Length: 103
Image 1 (cartoon, rainbow, N blue to C red):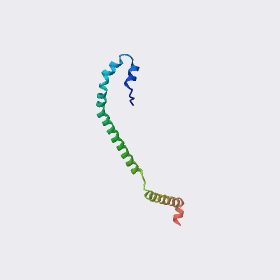
Image 2 (cartoon, rainbow, N blue to C red):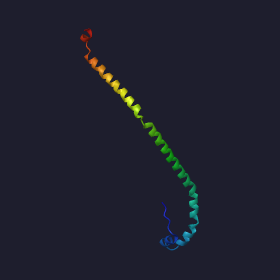
Image 3 (spheres, helix red, strand yellow):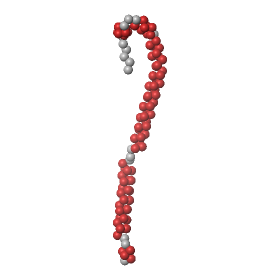
Image 4 (tube, one colour):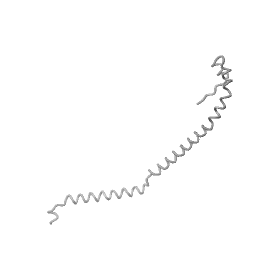
């Protein structure tokens, strides 16, 4: 951040001979600002593009990670049914023996 200091205040702070130095460089300052203006505009444009790209990526990530509750509930019920089937088969296999089979 740049703070503009009035010329009279700057001359009083800088001391004797400052007026000549100030007047010699006074015409260079606007040129320096003008030379930096295109660069500043490019930086601002790049920052805006990066911000837009970041927002687009965030939206895409949210869309990918969002789950449909009905689809998720259906998948959960299917997995629960498979688990119950495995438990039932395991219980039957644990009771299985050759003597039981031969009866």
